[in-house]
Length: 436
Ligand SMILES: [Zn+2]
Image (tube, rainbow, N blue to C red):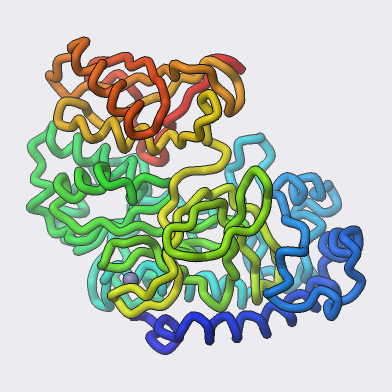
């Protein structure tokens, strides 16, 4: 454990500490964040005292990413929530964003240090240790994920950054430098499994014993995880963060039963119903959208930030001894499809389809006919066959029935030959809308 005293502290004691931090943070926002001064006043709060502690938090408005984006101007390109003078900012990351203009994420030296501490806790949960070598495949340069890589230095590991885009070079480095761990997206890990099989590269026999996946959901899907573990002959654990709040906020331990909150003491966690925005109590098996609040952040702190990540949470103490809650990401709220009133995440469809391996390759593409989330059945799904796999009508029918039984969604399965659907060296696209 990176910080045993912190990571095994009873959760109620953590909440007590967090409550004190939160009250200070609210006072800080009221004093320094123009965005939150306005937002909290509009909600009827004039002072930090009126706002109170964590137990009264649900009274406060949520923060949407779009509000932050709207507050960005030529004069304030990072947004009106920035709460420090420019000379205290030591780094500015960008998010790629789907809307064109990148959004900027500034950090003070302490913010950055806290991010590295968080990542060190989250990644060390996987079992990686001082003295081991780890190979990373993120082209992290301008993106917040870059800060996570600082964790490997902090942990005293030998970090071998190779970036994305040159699989040959990556595999050569694995063969020659013999790292015991590798970090990448689950999509890339799956792609490398196929790449190795095609070329007779002995990935199972390689030095890599731990595969740390992050950057998108998938590493926690049972079937995909089993396939990655077999392809690599390695244990798979996952990590998850969100640029506006912090990198690798969550990291899974060797028990493989969800990602622990590595950012405990830096970030407070809530769960809400994404439709009604009401709070959901944190308890084993609860599901909802993650809402996160910075407890100590200085440069661009967020209060009740809607992450759009839909998760299942567990609060019972883990066998590893860490007391922080654990989550599994089910999908992005933005990716949710509603098929005649039934909610379904694309990743859930992939998980069901993956039951049909080795007949299928595991790559799917959902092609909704209508724009937006709401769809009329049947939902068109392209399912890629395994190499030399045969696409019989019976197979399509069995997959269709299984999706209906498991997810209560009617689908239309199109079986496509191996190699038809696009692989990704970064993140997989599971949905392609036919109408825009
Ligand atoms: Zn654990």
